[in-house]
Image (cartoon, rainbow, N blue to C red; front, side):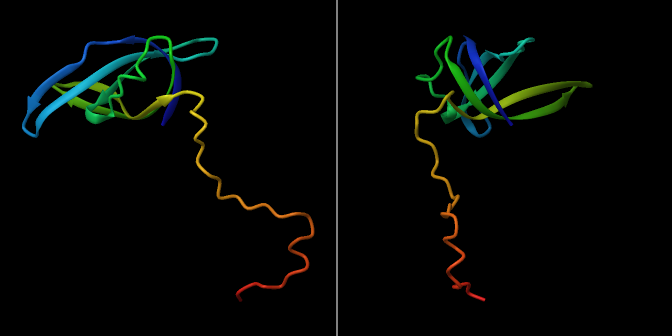
Length: 114
């Protein structure tokens, strides 16, 4: 899933040691636009944390997964980002695979491989 929203708060960085080694997690609060804006807490884990992008007031495009888990009979839901970038892009759009032909260009050729 993807979300474009304004960064309104950066929570303190969390670190620790687990069975797989050291970990770090950065939670951020973003707010959607529209008539009824919503606030969402998004978690960014490990090397996906880019402190240069996490400036309060900036517009971010966040690609994320939603995951729920049960603990002691209660359910908890996480929004985990797997990609965070500045909204509006940096002008580095991916090249398009679309091919366009001029009108009538294909009418004259009969070079199909079958």
